[in-house]
Length: 349
Ligand SMILES: [Zn+2]
Picture: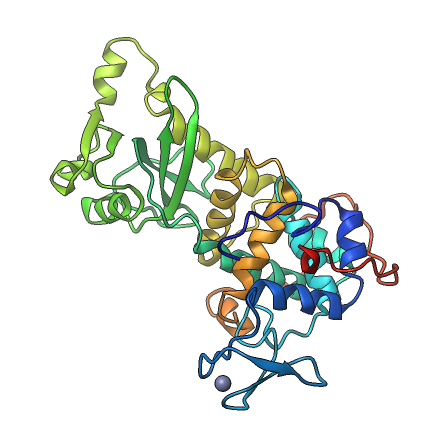
């Protein structure tokens, strides 16, 4: 919701206990989504007229054109089959666990009927993460490419056949040390035709762009950047560590690969890799956020503002496996749905 400073305990739950006491029923969840979607009160999505009244099934009837609109219509939760309480618990696990959650862990923890259902829920939540971070990276930005999915470190010069996917990585460098935000995107190859659009889409003009000596970056100074190419050969000739040339992209790429292997057992098909990269970037760029509950709020805020994501869209390129990958140890427990209702704090502020 634009314009407010969300506060823990009022606008978002601070703990799993608070989550379950606030959202004991689908009616509670609907009221929260209603508040997130129309903080100033209902506005008809059809005629843009403000004002309407709630009708028996929990939807709004427009005061002007009389169209009925469900709170979740046209949002990520449109025509859902899974109860909102389960959706909220899934969103909580997705947002509150440091490394997120795999489809198998989610299925087990929430006792979701099938693996593809859990898989699709997580992909819907990931789908909303594209929109934040539209502000491009600024200052001093390292840019490089790396291969995902291969065993050995990738060599440049065209995309190799097989499972390897070339990914562009951009990371802000902080002075005197440390790193700021990052961006990652799948590249068709390592040519200038692929690298230049990656830089312009993700780095603010005027920034200093640090790269290695690869020719694919030649000419980015003409696009409004201060280009600092470092020749690997020159660095090696001086006896310095080539790996330390771009420490930011090196770190982000290895964290992302470890996350893919750890949380998701490496079980990511190429058609979905970009959405996992989006999730990684979303988490990485909020790694200093003290409140995990705030991430829950941000994800739901984006979800009510996001168009529905249909299952057929998700599986258009790659279906989930019927049998999940190597199972991790069992953990978590199903939420109880019959806790006492504790009021609606978000309405009190
Ligand atoms: Zn209307």
